[in-house]
Image (cartoon, rainbow, N blue to C red; front, side):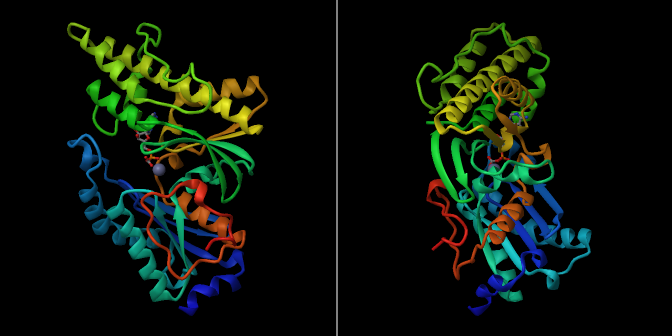
Length: 355
Ligand code: KG4
Ligand code: ZN
C-alpha cells in the first residue's frame, strides 16, 4: 500500500481532490484544487423519501449506489477534468446512515486504489463546521460552532482543526428533525424545514404561546421533542385549523426554536470565552435564526458567520474543503479508513496526529 504515503510528498498547491458525500439523502461530488472549489454537484433524494415522511435508509443506499458514478462523470465533464488529473480522493466516512456511508467510502477507496492516490476519510460534522470557509469567508479557530441539522444539534468549542469540546447538545430531537416533524403536523411534506420557514413568514409569532424548552435551565443542553408535542396539542385544540392558524403556528414554532438556539449559543460563547460564532448545518439556512443571531451578535461584539445558503445543507464541496484543510495542515492519510456511523467530534485529533 505504498501509494497511501505519497501525499506527504505532494505540494498542497498541486493537489486535485475529488470529494464524495453520501451520508444521508444527498448524493454529492465536488472537485477542489489549490485555487479552491472547481465545481460541485448535488443530487437530492428528498422527493424519493417524501411519501414516507423521513429518510428510508435502505432506499437511500440503493439510490446512492445507482447515482454516484453518473454524478462523478457529470462533474468531471462540467470541469473538463479526467480521473487522471486526480491526486487525492476524500469521502464522508461518518457519522451517518451505515449503508449510505459505505457507498462513497467504497467508491472513493476504489478510485484511490485504481489511481494509486491517497484516500482521506472525512467527519461530516467537521466539514459542516468549516463550510463557511467556502466562498463567503469563515473564521479561524478558536470559535464556537452551532451545528444545527436534521441529525445533529450541538454547541462545540472549536479550539483548532481537529480539537473539539462538546459544550451542549440536544437530548432528543435535532432542531432540523423538529422542524421536519412540525412541518408534517402543519400539512407540509418532508423535508419541511424550509417550507415551514416560508409559511412562518405569513404568520404572527405572538398569537400562540409555545414553550422554550430548557431555557430556564443553566448550561447549553437543549431539547426539542416537547416543542413538537406542544404544537400538536395546540393544533388539536383548534376546531378546524385554517391557513391563518397554520401560518401563526409555524411562526410561533420557528420563533421558539430560534429563541432557544440563540440563547444557548450565547451561553456557549460565554462558557468558552470566545468571540466568534460559526453556524452551520441545514437549519443555518433559516432566515429568522440568521437575523436573530446577527442582531444579538452586533449588540455583544460577537462575530457570527454562516455558510452561503448553497453550502448549509449536505454537499460535497464542504467535504473537499475540510479534506484540503487537513492535507494543508499535514494530514497523513492512513492505510485503512473505516466507516464510523457513530463518531463523536471530540474523538478527532488534529492533522498529523491521527492514528
Ligand atoms: O445538514 P442537512 O442537509 O442534513 C443533515 O446532516 O441532517 O440538514 C437538513 C435539515 C432538515 O431537517 C431540513 O428541514 C432543515 O435542515 N432545513 C431547515 C431550513 N432549510 C433546511 N430548517 C429550518 N429552516 C430552513 N430554512
Ligand atoms: Zn449534514
